[in-house]
Length: 168
Image 1: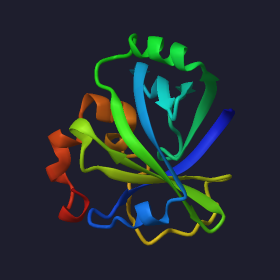
Image 2: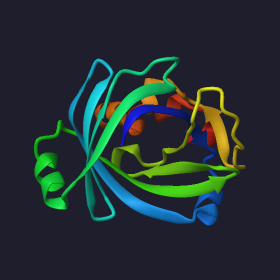
Image 3: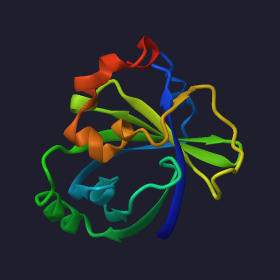
């Protein structure tokens, strides 16, 4: 897949496990970054026994839109490329939750990002309406603290106290 990615990102209420019950699928994801600088990233991901390499360009329009190119690679290739990654891997479980005509991807993080739960929804256009599921909280689109490439460098454990109690 390649082209523009338009997405909005949200925090999930801390005590709300509703997304787990509402999910129709989930998978464990481990990812690393070969390169992450000036808003451009090259990411390697292992998800459900499959490997992927993704290139993302800088964000525009408040962090909502950016160029993305993603290609499936073999699991063996992904494992080898992980060895080239910058320090700090991301480890999370992704839950898929249908809401209206959209799918919300809810990420529950582990390791130094334990306790952080975020949801994102991909849109066809920046002004496309969508139905928010009950567990959606504060919008954090464009806040780079919540980019995975940033979380590997500055994990949630370091700055979690800057968020309100309902999100830590």
